[in-house]
Image (cartoon, rainbow, N blue to C red):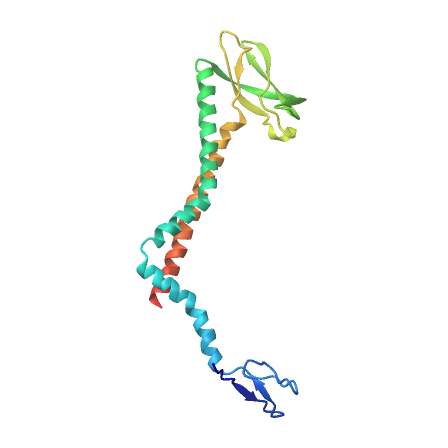
Length: 207
């Protein structure tokens, strides 16, 4: 078996170099790349577009795969939003069921206390409300990291037969709106990604 060795002469010293050399072995002269390499670079540049064009034209399942991938990436955020909304709805239902026949009045913040709730130290607020001239105290069943998380005035529901029994909305009720915002953001992100992919697909197929 015979091999053909391609050589090129150095334009500076005339030394015979291997065709793959980038510079002359004898004098170190730097060889300029041949023009034929530009076509190779150009082909590599558009190879990705040609491959995608073939896939978009021939493979009808590719779009389904792309949709599945996008949904899989956004799924954790989607689940988080639904969980927060579900917890909020459940807490609202439970609290409304307990205080169904209660009356409502306003309560004013009077002081703060250091307290421990669910094994964590925090600040608890103490409110004061009046029923038939009698003053009662109430405190929400949650603590905050600092006193600024509590409002100065809140609405409170109390048992008309025993005003000492009261119901204050918990912070979990606000989670519904946080979950709703997350769901809206997920939908917007999905729509934006789909529009970008659609625009890119059109560009590939038009080339």
